[in-house]
Image (cartoon, rainbow, N blue to C red; front, side, top):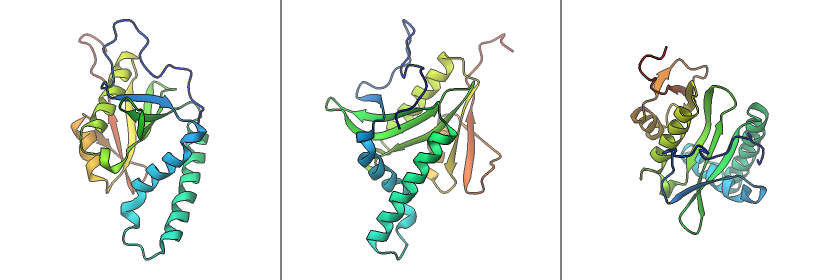
Length: 187
């Protein structure tokens, strides 16, 4: 998934204060990242497979197939999106993924996922703050996303980050939207 917009991944305006934490980096996803992305996807889907009576081999085949379908869907539905890996530390160890469509004035977070051991320590909040800061700096109209309704941790994260819930087209997913604050006097 190396396709993406030509918009640079980080602010290019001199003096911009929109920054990721010092220990996090974004880089475009490369073909060589596929094994990590499959592992990450499997970790996201693991909770729903815990109660499933399938043998482990069938679960892994299901995860691999669902991952392949998801990637094909993302590229077809969001051909101009940015697909980034989130790296941590000086060794640039991959810990997650951020997929963001900035091709319209209303931005869409396609996916923000972190490895289980990276969740709950502020990294997701930092990534959302970065997206919001970029959206504000680039005069985006809004940032929206879908999240699985049973993913209470993600719902809390987005609510804390100022996203409001709107009617969803999908019964299994909540639709959330955040709009940058407007300068006073702006219509």
